Image 1 (cartoon, rainbow, N blue to C red):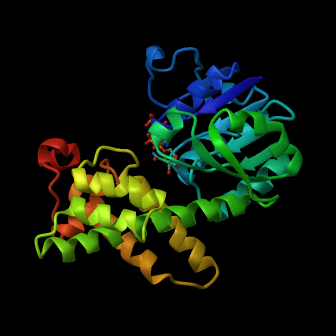
Image 2: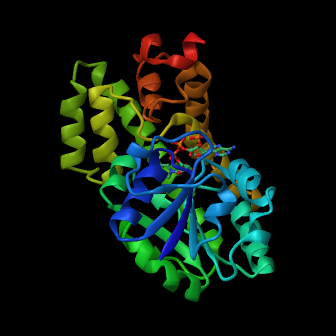
Length: 299
Ligand code: NAP
């Protein structure tokens, strides 16, 4: 199958490579130059429009404005190959997913929302969890492709926005878990309990979930290389807030983690892993990440 791919960032490059490994011809476009040796087997094309002249195109750009600019404003839905299915794996807003669904319907194209759970290393090993929603025939047509990217495709029905709401809810809850662990460390380190011992205790008793396992390790090691950039996590908290506002709800814990991530980004740590938020909480607002490893701070 000929597949287009738009956005070869941390996630997109790993996913495009897995599509190549599954035997597909992948025609990929990225805004800035990408070294061919970093994506062996991928055909790098000169325009995003080229990636839309395929059977199915994946988009893994960072956010709503990037997708609007690269795809909608450039008229790619109008010039796309007839019958193409567009799979948006980025984490986007619920409102934008609805808009994309309508615009694809008008253009006679298939549209599937397929945001993913898992960081770049998980994407590289083809172990993502994929939350897929869209018309049943479109989802069925691309399911073999999704299967080559992840360990499980969670089918969430015909309404694409469901997948986006579920993804935002998951990220919101991971941020809450990161903050919860940080506040646990504040209390326990104050009486001399090592954070590694505290984490061993909580993982072995009440909090054995994946989010706690993965992020306790980063907090314990004080390792904040992304991973998932704090600036993108802040974007997701804003989208979750907006989704709540749409239904007239404000979610207090969401607002708290959004504020924490906002402080981390304002302090210049937007390109660090979002678990940097925990480090700032533990240190009462500062971070152990040095200005050496913080290029934004030096500018
Ligand atoms: P990333 O490494 O920052 O890559 C972002 C990609 O978007 C790059 O290809 C970038 O192009 C492109 N881009 C951004 N703005 C653009 C614009 N205006 N025009 C054209 N291209 C633009 O981010 P990522 O970690 O791969 O994340 C991508 C998406 O996956 C996001 O929606 C994120 O929330 C979601 N996600 C991330 C993770 C994770 O752990 N990293 C996990 C699940 C989901 P350049 O290379 O030219 O900058």
